[in-house]
Amino acid sequence: MTSNSLRDADIAYTLHPYTNAVAHEQSGPMVAMRGKGVRVYDDAGKDYIEGMAGLWCTSLGWGEDRLVDAATKQMKELAYYHSFNHKATEPGIRLAETLVQMAPVPMSKAFFCNSGSEANDTAIKMIWYYHNAIGKPEKKKIIARLRGYHGVTVAAASLTGLPLNQKGFDLPIERILHTSCPHHYRYGEAGETEEDFATRMAADLEALIEREGPDTIAAFFAEPVMGAGGVIVPPKTYFEKIQPILKKHDILFVADEVICGFGRTGKMFGTETFGLQPDIMTMAKALSSAYLPISAVLINETVYQGIRSGSDALGAFGHGYTYSAHPVAAAVANETLAIYDERDILGHIGQVSPRMQERLRALADHPLVGEARGIGLIGAVELVADKATKENFDPARKVGPSVAAKAQDNGVILRAMAGDIIAFSPPLVISTAEIDEMFDRFEAALNAQAEGMGI
Image (tube, rainbow, N blue to C red; front, side, top):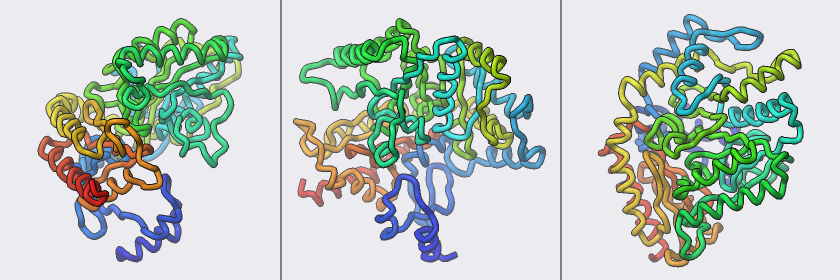
């Protein structure tokens, strides 16, 4: 098909996620045709540095032959089998063993899904099932955070604290609560240190728990670094103050590692970076470098024992997916984890991430930038109308989307999020030279936006 016919067919037949359907009918898609390393190429042959690793996920970049070969080999041996009713495959068994053993805190079992949304949705069901099994049927409410992101299924989108994921969908569902967003730059009070702000955030959480009744609160979900809500790095001492409150009230802690897991923050898991002690961990994205869909839920022994007794009483744990532990996806995930180890991906991140953070934080001096923030190989700039007051631009002006569009025209793909925030999350294999090229392209777009606004 020609480029024009591809675009016409897409407009005619595809409903796109996270897309304005009316605008799409007018503009059509950017059609990605191939990828190599940190770059993708469109149907006209133009190259783009993929500054978001796709959707925070293509950690090893494009064209990794070992992952292609792992999928091909497994497809020839056993293209599909399931994990229902005591069935298993070697790749799924190996992956469960590896994940449980590499977990940064003691975990007992791995359960496999196909996306981060499914993993978090599954975690919710497990939490409810667990509390029923241990005789605490009233302990069902779950707390997430405003601006947190945990997926788009009915339950996971209810956890997500972003209006776009709930408006029009009759969400959130009952028993899902939200506490304050721990973004010091945006919500800190005048003169309030990060530590004092963290103390206030912890007090907000405990006040919510007390209002609702501790005996009704089952779990607390948190991303180590909040991703789609704006790449919000927790303020100093935040998790140190949050976790004792959860322990005090016997509330399970779920660490959503869907974005942070497998090196993004500089450690293998964000749980390590911020000293977390979760009872449950969810992960996806970089688990297979996004070459095939797969996600996992890790549970500790306490949660497992509850599910174990419940499944015996009811006859089975009545949850699972046709493609849970799909052998081809599991084989690719196993090979991805092997590559991380053999190529010392954490060592590489340690070498190149200081340059990314240096280039990122230098943008704080730009007249359009209120805050530049990040850790490891993830970061964001928040664009503001007034640097002194932190006043946002009128959303109708679409300043963030305009900058992202200019960046794409300039050959770097980034993500504009609510609040005129531009995110960076390149493949973990990016080089220092490619980091510089990515920021050079972005700065040209940012300067063009400022010039067009007369700034």
